Length: 91
Image 1 (cartoon, one colour):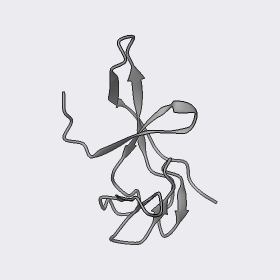
Image 2 (cartoon, rainbow, N blue to C red):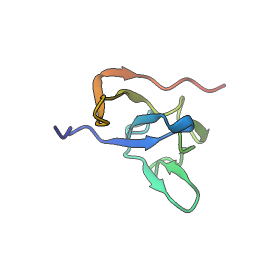
Image 3 (cartoon, rainbow, N blue to C red):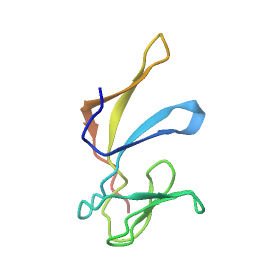
């Protein structure tokens, strides 16, 4: 099933999958992936995030939000949008 929720599904540290909400927590702009710098960027307000969704700079109050991910016994990767979590606040 395809979700209308904008999500980036990435393979994170230790071969773990991460499902990151593709909306900036500051004002909800769609974040974009910048291959050259290996980071997510909010083109509306300038916040930048690491490949794992960790805040690097800009006005956003926290890391990118995310969703739970399950890998079935058959190897299928599923994003569980019912398991929403807010990104951690930064100092």
